[in-house]
Amino acid sequence: MKFEELLDCLENQHPSFVRAWEKHARSEEIDKVAKYIVEANDLQIKSKLLRVFRNRIFPEGIENILTFLDLDEYDISLNSVEVLKHFNDMRIRYKAIELLNSKANWYDYIPLLSKNFKQNDYELLNNLISKGIYDEFEWHSIQLSLNELFSLHSNENTPQLYLKLLNNNHCTICRRQMFKYMWRDGCLTPDIIESAKLDGNDETRVMVKTFEENANYNS
Ligand SMILES: [Zn+2]
Image 1 (cartoon, rainbow, N blue to C red):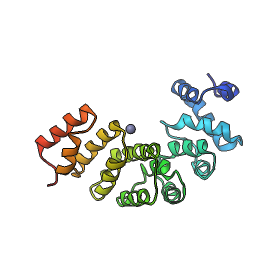
Image 2: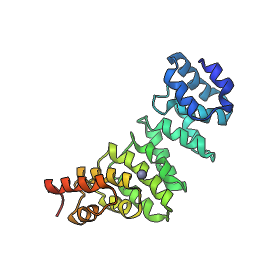
Image 3: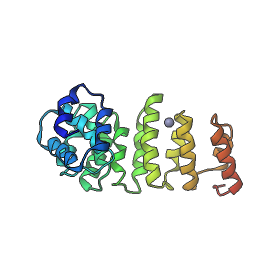
Image 4: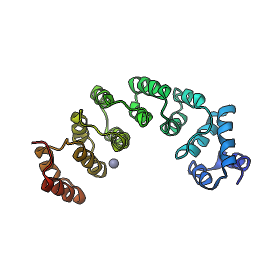
């Protein structure tokens, strides 16, 4: 399907349709999408089209997309995060720090640091978490954003961040993932190992026993 045909039917399609289209589109059609995002005015359509670039590099300049981050429309702002997280660019870092410090849903902007990370960012994120009160859904969103960052950048210096997540996020799948990062970063202590042995997730209990047998944690 050509980009023009996609555009014609976009209004009535589920957002996932764009992702399905993207997988089969020729590169010249993808380039047309990028040009449209830069040049056209309709923000709703642009927001849907940004999904084309979740897993591929946006081939035009990112100046426009940076401005979408500030918009109050949740969809276009967060779809822009997914596009920009693939770029190493100081403008993205500056914007990320600004939004982390100003937005109520600051944790949704953590992925902007993926390729623009500095070591003391974990300390910044730990401080930001301390400033708020979150419900269980927000804790899970915080955890999901951080899991992605942990997978890319080790965290040896701010183990408190891991502890906060352990104490507040109740998703056992995320917890299991996080134990792996804590193991990698030398942040597992005998106390944490002991409580993890009682975790509701079978695989976590087996996994921490393996960690213990290797006995490479801080004591
Ligand atoms: Zn989870």
